[in-house]
Length: 209
Image 1 (cartoon, rainbow, N blue to C red):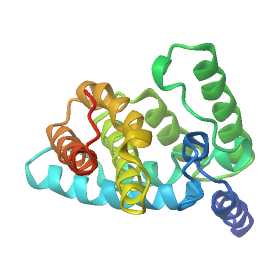
Image 2: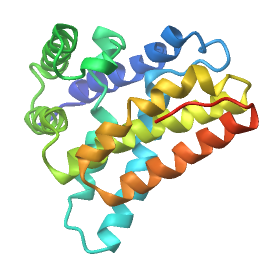
Image 3: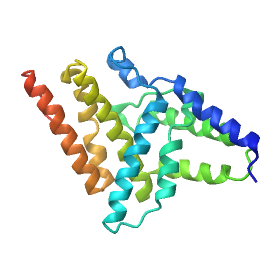
Image 4: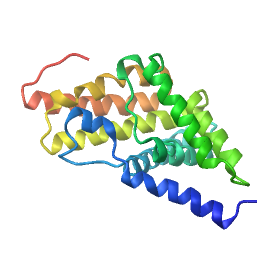
């Protein structure tokens, strides 16, 4: 049975994500326009997951919405210990850097959940499901995670950041949406990409994707 102390400890780890900034924007040199914490990103992922899961359920797709939202809420929880380790966009899932990132985050979630009674095994199972990305729920949350990133990129463009600087976030996401195999995710990506292209066209910026 989960104790009040267990709940407090888990919540404190989650709240710690408010103090962890998303690293990709810093690497791109645009975080000064609008810094974003991992907690803010998690919130955006949750909101996206709600709308997308409701849409899919309405079209007859069988999925566990409760599990989907738990997954969205905890998918970045390890970063309360590891900080936000950036993905190697060009070698995602293949490079030694990406392998190390996954291992560090796996150990971090085990540390966070170790000794917790009750729901810890369920949370660990849901987090691992997200990492494996084979179920409909995990693929949905993976797409929602990227959608939130691209929406933030568009907000940055509205704040004056050049689409040329942010183009790599859109370009590196294309393959992921192709492999997730969920039509609504691909449709949303296509719309966001067109918004990005329009911002670029308005500034006479040209690129291929």
